[in-house]
Length: 146
Image (cartoon, rainbow, N blue to C red; front, side, top):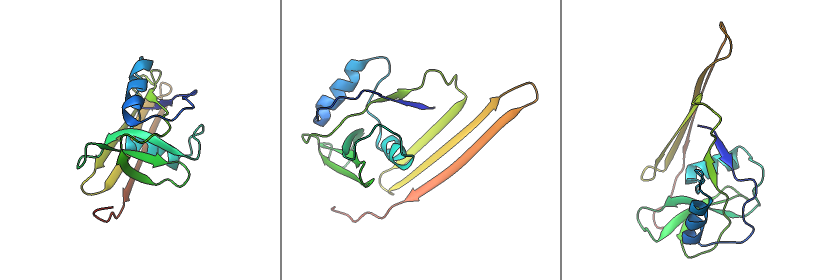
């Protein structure tokens, strides 16, 4: 799956509930990105983000009154109270990929491990094929209680 990022995100800051409501109001498959999708956008230097905090759709499982944000100045990921206000940039699956590319995100919160895998087998011509595979694992050490 290839993601399409919102080109004209709102300028105002929103709390998490308003951000979720806003994303839903856009319709046509728009939604808040997951924590992993935001980290991927930061890592790949996707254009259009301010050097500030952006809400993800990912709720912190131990305290459901908290959700994750990604800091696009330094790439930090934290969970905070959903009543705080941050920027929002919505995402949707690109409808023009025709299923050629598949992207799997597995986010294991307890082990603090994010694995991303991209793969594609796309027939270009009668005798030509593209095969791509990339595997990345990022293990982060998290101190309990922070």
